Amino acid sequence: MANGMRLVVAVALVAGLVTAMFATGVVAAPFKVSVADGGLKFSPKTAHVAKGRAVKWTNEGSMSHKVNFYKKPKGAKVTSFSLAPGASKKRKVTKVGVYKYRCTVPTHSTLSNGKCTGMCGKVRAH
Image (cartoon, rainbow, N blue to C red; front, side, top):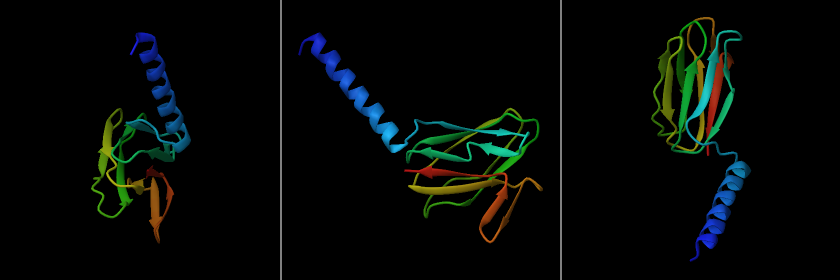
């Protein structure tokens, strides 16, 4: 195959991949979730990632937070963690489904009857 033809095929493959990613809402890993003290919230509130990818939480605020997964897909193995100011942690989503998490520092969130209010977030794995 001539070099010009290889380039056309490569460009077509990349364009197809990019189009497929945007059409499905898949975000390349690691997807970043920021934590800021200003509104005591995770941003974005919902992260959309492909199964097998990582999500990276970064504490950009001045206080520590505790990220606790209170609901996850059956068989998913994801562990909770603490985030000191300036720290980052990654977790891989291994199953398709919704992973719900919250900050368990007192006064940052509450969980009642499975409903979280306050500093709450979720990861949707496709």
